[in-house]
Amino acid sequence: MKKIDKEHYLINKLSSKYIGDDAAVVGDTLYSMDAFFEDVHFKREWMSMAQIGRKAMLINLSDAIAMNAKPEFALVTVSLPKDISNAEIDELTQSLESTAREYGCEIIGGDTVGGDKLHLSITIISKSDDPLLRRGLKFGDLLAFTGILGESKRDLDALFRGEKISDSSRFLEPTLRAEFIAKARPFLRVGMDISDGLYCDTNKLLDINKYGFDILKTINDDIGFSGEEFEMLVGFDPEELGQLKEIAKELNIPLTVFAKVAKNDRRFKCKSHHFQ
Image (cartoon, rainbow, N blue to C red):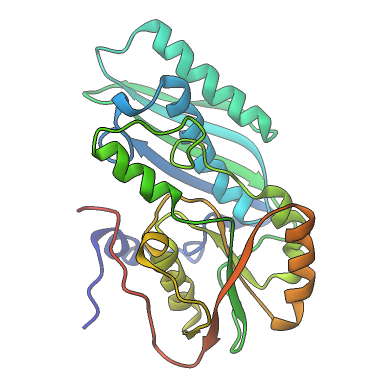
């Protein structure tokens, strides 16, 4: 019997037809929300308030970007610990607002509560007339990812060892592939951002489409288990590979084809990043 973690157990208990993608699509409006919690997703000694605010907003904008949607509005809830200063609150809110503005998104409200730790939860409301969903894979389709994976896990491991990492590290500063998705959308069947690692997110994509895979390129664990990369995982007809390579080349984005969709139940080994 397949064992599922508590996150997926909870999700499976919900019955809405809108659940299953990076965002819920209701008409031409998309709704998404992610949490960014101290001592779960980050430690305050690792990041400045500006970096915390920026990453919290970027990982939420990523859901909209991954679905070929334009973020319009954000609602932000923040749990503020007693030891946080007004200057730190200013730094945090300015970072949240400036990052949202980069993507044409406006913070229009939310909530604040007192707490023991710094927690953020952000809802993004976006629009799309051609959203990129997770459902729609076909037998024989190719699976690929953008960018170079592995840096996020490498630098997270370094932080746990008490080492410093670069301010430009992907762990601190995710890169969103908005332009690639906008240009590639006509040639893609499915897509999602890589938040839980290539192994786990590929399994999610295969589960929802009821397919397996044949490996085309060996993936090592440093790449497969690297979560919070926020690169794109995409599936497409092999006939579209040339078009997608041209778009990736034009934007100077690596595109790695690593698997082919098959009629089997093969899955990657996957360690949940939640509730460990």
